[in-house]
Length: 307
Image (tube, rainbow, N blue to C red; front, side, top):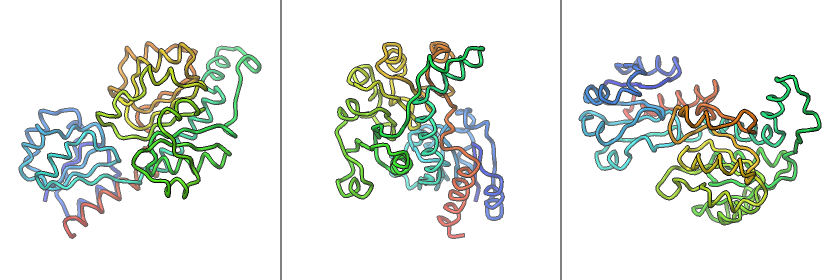
């Protein structure tokens, strides 16, 4: 059976698959849609991350495809409905990068509360902003989580070490889970009104797209920090920058963007003296998580085909 891998996967996991399968690794196919469409019929198994768009056009040509492994969690780059209707098993690496993302969120929270980006910029220019730029603690702050899945649960556990108070918006969980994690479930407007930090942990759906727009930022009463390690289109990026300029928020960290890589016009619109952290969709990608994710998908392939 033939496997096609279109994005980076741990070498040892690829070697493991090579013992039982005919494996092709071609990272260029993650962005070469037409070539992928031409050759996908030759493969029984496809392994991707988030760049490869496994849409209906690709899948209609995938006559032999039985299994798609996602080296990560989000499935918005895969037409899962088509897969369900055509007996193609889709396997995300659920939970394998949760620790990495949770650490990223806490790191950004601390850095932005303490205005580290601004401190760094001024100090590197030869200034000494010891008293001109303020710094805050996470201790005692209200941490608002939009979504309360596995990653958000890990964020809440870490944030409580710093004595932060956790509130969460998630219409799909019940009070038993909230009690188990000692958090308060609130509606979305209470997140906007009460939180000092807002971290997004929602999937991208028609309902969540542009959920954080200018109308939402206007409701934010505590000039919160915004952290998005979920999906870029959940935040309206133009409105985010407007909200920062108008001091509706006090900083932001983006690991995901409406378009990836982040376009130059967006990057050019961010001023040098902005309290922000920009990273290239790496919150869940650490040396450790890559091993976990790759091993999980490799083992899932073997289990699915009973090898």
